Amino acid sequence: MASMARDLLAQESVDATLEHITRAATDHVAGCDAAGILLLHGKRVETLAPTHDLVVESDRLQERLAEGPCFDAARTSTEERVFRIADFTADQPRWPAYAAQARELGVGSMMGFLLYTEDEDLGALDLYSHHPGSFTDDSETAGWLLASHAAIAFSSARSHAQMEQAMTTRHVIGEAMGILMGGHRLTEEQAFEVLRRYSQEKNIKLREVARRVCEEGRLT
Image (cartoon, rainbow, N blue to C red; front, side, top):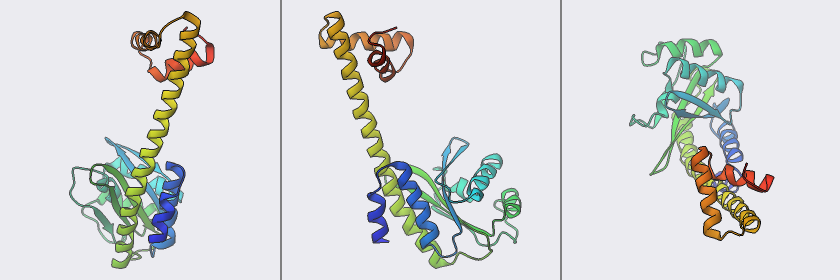
């Protein structure tokens, strides 16, 4: 787990981090045949880094039914952090509709772990097995440790990506200001005000306005 945590933090992008997380789940959690990360946007589900089509199909099913262990794990209104269905051949009163249809997809057992840090909820790491009873208490412990490491790495990778985007945006705006200053003999403040005013009047993001200036040499 220590080696895996170092590997997670060494990834160069959010996508690479997520793929490493789900691949580590299938490699290190006993009984795990497939893994993915579910993000919940209101009632809309987004699947990230699935290792198998089964993950995508299950997430779509949970979205359509608005129920399921990973769907619940990603809901910040709940206090539970781990959800587990040990045997899909048995009745599941908590998620009856999902369990019945997931069984037809080939799910035998599954677990969902909330990915969170102290200040933000991120989604759920979901682990699947084709066989009933595959996940033991040791599997749950390993999954929980993985989810804890994954949440930190995910948050760090996302923050890094946001920082890079901000730096790129700042560079593009600076370049656009330089073009306007040189072409219209404007001061730095005046050039920025031209970009800002155009952004507001046209309801276009400042970054996009700056990009157009850089590509076309003027505002159109």
